[in-house]
Image 1 (cartoon, rainbow, N blue to C red):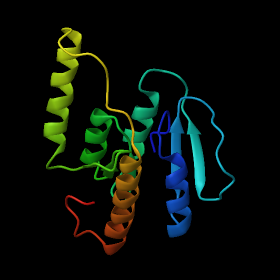
Image 2 (image 1 turned 90 degrees about the vertical axis):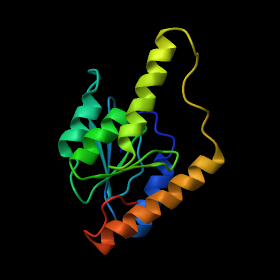
Image 3 (image 1 turned 135 degrees about the vertical axis):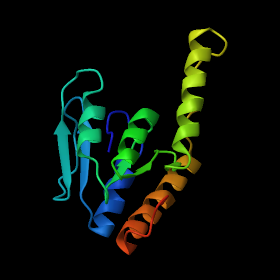
Image 4 (image 1 turned 30 degrees about the horizontal axis):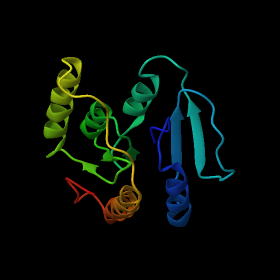
Length: 151
């Protein structure tokens, strides 16, 4: 999990505990985590993209990566991981190209002053969609390798 500023950490802890899966939180600095044997905090330091680099280097088939960072999602998909945004949006081989293109276009438009602001606010519906997507991803991975674009 790309843990810095992730709004669904506590939900992830509960789901992981229920399903008996391990969660590795990757962050630029120490953060308080519950005392659960299935949780690990990996502090990678404050260098730019250090957490993203660690996650991309360690992600592999059978992993579920939680991130809102689209370039990181792309890197993890290339390594065979299943990727979900905190809003519940699954990133897959079939949609990551469009997501990257949209991200780049919006970044250019912000840079040119054509639009202002960042992502929309996080809502309760996003949390609900995330929980559903995480549950689907866990079940898909347990079913086996027949998933090409899971969750």
